[in-house]
Length: 208
Image (cartoon, rainbow, N blue to C red):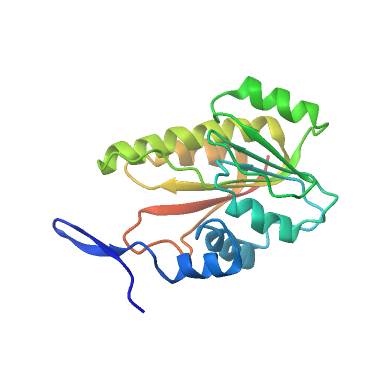
């Protein structure tokens, strides 16, 4: 099978439509990123059928698709993104278009759902990349710190937080607050991450 490639000066070309892309399309998932969450779930077993899950930076919605296959259909699942997320047709999935930094809007929306705490919060957030690695990594840390603060409010004690992080020299600015708040931090790079990517997933276990 031949995949289209993009050449970058000084670097090897990378595959845009790789096997994960095609497998996601075949299975009806909205993005190849679903396999990252599925790998995390297989390794850590972080989502249970009775868990209430909040997914941040959800668009286009592949994480939500995977989550709805794990949790019971009567358990609420909430997805939030600055971009519009097309509905799924699942009555238990509630969607909001909002920025992760707009805490008041997020708080008001979750309050209307009658939810006080979630068992798990997931996020596949990434900044709009500039091509400057240091800038992109710094912005990733900033966005994830916003999600850590959302979890302060909405994740229950002993709950689990999953973050996607562009790892660079500023990453300790994120690791410090995580270790203050969680009993364990496990770092994991799923196979579905592209080899050239500097992203990792932080599995934050046991909210204090």
